[in-house]
Length: 197
Picture 1 (cartoon, rainbow, N blue to C red):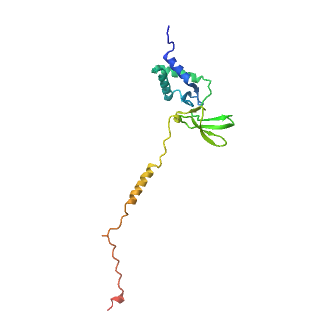
Picture 2: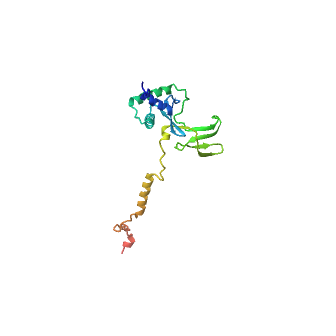
């Protein structure tokens, strides 16, 4: 009798179903809701390399087994079938907002700041503040894996222009050479009276 009835494909599929939820987007894209942090989830297209890498990495870390290409391919195909026939509500691929209270008349609106601490902007009629919430946000891959670059204090082309201006200001303005003399004034014609004896 086989002590391990689960095939490699079955092990990978069971791992995927244990940690993520198959679903569809509003555009009928087959997706998986995967955990990113304790407070944040990502929605990844199942056919994307992001989902495949997530599945390989988490499966290897838990089981210390590197899945074969064929087993991984068949498991993803089965997971796609689960997503296609899932009764889970359709999801947005880039949802970073939530609310407290009634969705039509919320008491507060939450805007995800897309960091690993689960911080969000808590907006009410009285004002807003940054809080750490246990609300589960969903993000697109671009929001959860990229950081905005730090703003530069001054563009480089401005610095180059200023350096050019400072170099010019340090130099003395050119002056006419002393060897160059102004042309002599034209001689005035003498009057007939002055030429008479």
